[in-house]
Amino acid sequence: MGKKIRSKKYREAAKQVDAGKRYAASEAFDMLSSFPKAKFDETVNLAVKLNIDPRKAEQNLRGAIALPHGTGKQKRVIAFCEGELADQAKEAGAIEAGGEELAKKVAEGWLDFDQAIAHPSQMRHVGKLGKVLGPKGLMPTPKAGTVTEDVVSAVREFSAGKLEFRTDPAGNIHVPLGKRSFSSSKLSDNLEHVLNHLKSLKPTAVKGNYIQKVSISGTMTPGVLVAVEQQ
Image (cartoon, rainbow, N blue to C red; front, side, top):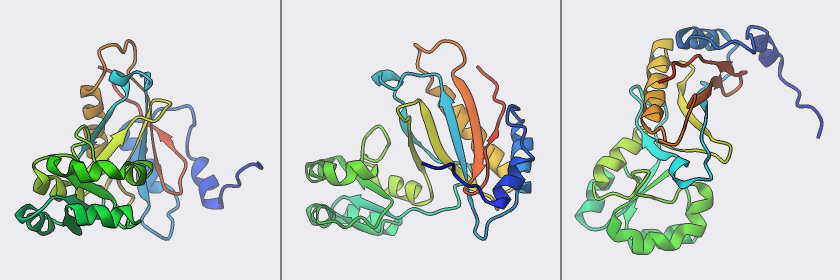
């Protein structure tokens, strides 16, 4: 494959970044704000490299987190539940709610949603959707807070932008932090919230620096490394 050709705006932004330097969070977000902007409100993405071995179950981190200032994007959420609970889930923001009939609709190929929540009683139906939902990262799990008896709260939180995260095979975690239209202070708050949460999940077997590298970037911008205090 040939070398990727970057846009003029990207190259202009890259000249501002000292590739080997780790910037204070406020400085990093100010720099990101100064980069040439795209014609749309870009997502600010966070990449965290952790000193873990994801092949070991206890170090394969996964969970869900709600950011203090949200992500700037609402999610389309469906809920596997029945009866009065299904009505309440719709009132809380679910675009669809139901039991066996909703599972059948998804099994037939309907995937116009970003998140699936399930009441434990519905896993007899949802469990059959692994081959459909699994490859899309949409399969509800207790660990991520998407299989829960409190379906209504989960629908409300995920509709407002609550994030699922998990480590990739290289030990990285990727999550959106917000939009470039957010103030640097809001993005800094969101970043601090995510890093503090990850620190709270540090596996006991990990020695040395747990958070090895933190980088932020816009959809169309180069990355900027952020300095992080180790615990």
